[in-house]
Length: 186
Image (tube, rainbow, N blue to C red):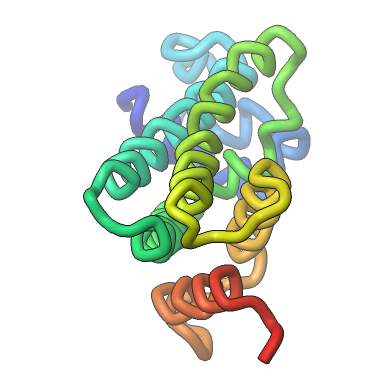
């Protein structure tokens, strides 16, 4: 049993039961080990949660920062970022669900450590929107609000998206891009 095994399993357990509903015994049982063996690798459920949040943010930030640094017009870059982000959410659903829905379970000290990483990730999105403003491609009254709206729409997708559903994650991403970039007005 490796730390990665523990984190992968914990992500599945947290996604299914929620952080507060899951116990270290649940994680140990899912791993097929004694709870004492689990404590040999990790100190607490909080440690596991923070490690999962860090893992998810690092994975997503690496993926999105590669796209955001490409030499593309801001609208094309945003489309590609939306597609990449939704694909990463769908491909890593257990891990990203923990990031999106369990971050509030962090204790105060751990939450304080987590916030700068989250803010750095959100800055990637604000930066492309600001780039679009500077180049007069986008018209936004409030970049921070637009960033939060975009993140909210994309993040909520994880609650209803089904891999075998009516639309692929790429089709959903393209529809979101059209909606965000073109709006609803005719």
